[in-house]
Image 1 (tube, one colour):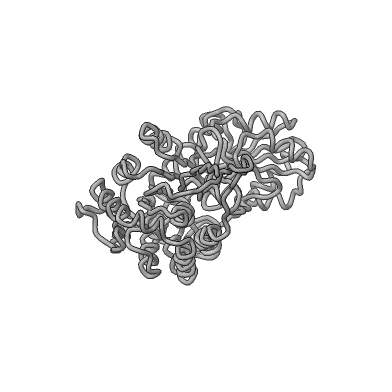
Image 2: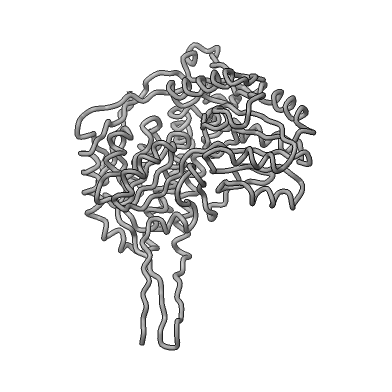
Length: 481
């Protein structure tokens, strides 16, 4: 039984309470590790450790900060196979996916921000012949970073790296459902010689450890990725304290397929954008709108592709889908499939729990990839985030109709458009209420670009200098001489 420890003040330590939580392997449904059940006492200890080095880290040269981050990136890369294995076991995702996406992206996150700070410049404005203004940036202080379970190390480092690069010490809480790679990152930071207290990782429940982070008076900035309901609660607690907030929340992303698309490329990518990571990516396209002339062709080809996808042991290279993250989440997704049937939907493929043949995995949290048609665009199934291997398909007759249906949800994170018409692509992209638009592709990311959503999909933008500046306070200095 693996026992995870908190990383506070440069050391791996047990929770002050001595209490632990069970950590499950989703592919088997068995407990395989224990994580600290931390509370406000552990968070306070982490804040004290961070506060001790707050000034020193802010004053550390940009070159030296970059060097630390590059060293961490190199160590993550050197341990890619081990980290991918850990991620697959802890999350239920296929090992090949963790190796090709999750861990490499964690490396990229550290390298991107390590190099970005080396190439910054500040603004200056000459107001008159003897007056000019210049802008300076200083770290905001101790940063609170809370990350989700779907892309554990990937999204954990997406927050930590820019905060550290900007000169902020960090109190970070990974999801209690998938804590293992964050624990491994603790060991890597020790090996890299990161100064004690610069990064502190507190494990535990959101209702205890996470709540203590967002309410702590010495933590002026909170970066959170997770559910919209939790984001609303964080905002209600942090806003009266005038904390800086970055909230990357839920999505109900549309995939709009016009008849003039490159059909083969669209079909291949739509399978991926629907079911990658068991549909547990905030950017997955869960509502598919297809122009009527190719609707039946698409439906039949899509069902044929999806129904042949192999489900099973995440460690097998043949598995296209692994297990969803938990029993609770599996039950939630199944409840939405039942709701879809109640609302008049027809299951074209999938719709059930999948039971592997191997005894070891028969209690794992596996779901068949599911395609549903026949639903109204404004029913609950098409309006509420499911976050699993479930998509709906609907025909449309005009671009205006597709845009109306796409914009009908309270979310606005991402959207995908498939068309060979340049004008149609641009016109549709401008009309969609989404923060990220992909045209004839999906999940292609340039880390310099802004990342975030509209409406209930979040507040603020991550990525590039948007992320770095979130962890800074900007100051204008006006000089007359």
